[in-house]
Length: 217
Image 1 (tube, rainbow, N blue to C red):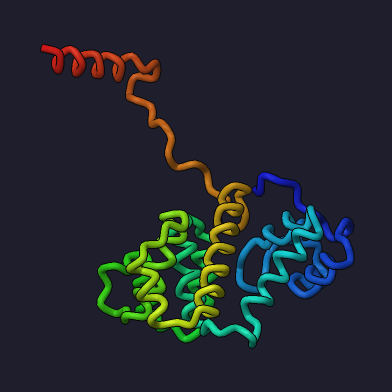
Image 2 (image 1 turned 30 degrees about the vertical axis):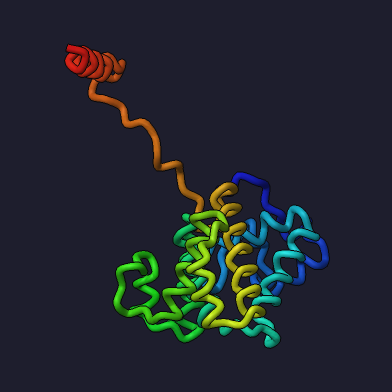
């Protein structure tokens, strides 16, 4: 379950209710969760806690899909699928893998995104966009000059700004989904201590003591 309260249909503000109607019909998405794409839909019901933030986020989706954009949807979705994977969000990765196919990215290229650096199916433009995405997400914006020079040789300044804004926006979404355990990111922490056979922990302590003593000799 999400870590924050979800907003039922009865408490939704008019702007939130409009989106609920589009996504869930006349269902209460808290009592009867589920969207047409198979997700639980709790991204919407949690973001609805703060209606102006809800509206801002929904407005961004329209900005990315506007006909005014210079960056082709192909490269946007290539980058956003990688953003989901590199940002550790199963939700963002899964949803944008589907969007990537809709944008014309072949199945073999979508499958190559997690290990893109060693894949022969990606061309120069693909690899440049993916390298830039990794610098934004994994290097926290420390984009190397060589990466940016390649990017500028292939795209307009306007398209690069659009790409940067889209990746950074979805890095935010990936982080929030993991933190709040929304949608497919509602998973327990996987890095935990695994108990030793001795429930009291004495055996493992004895082993570490023996190793330490051996190293000191």
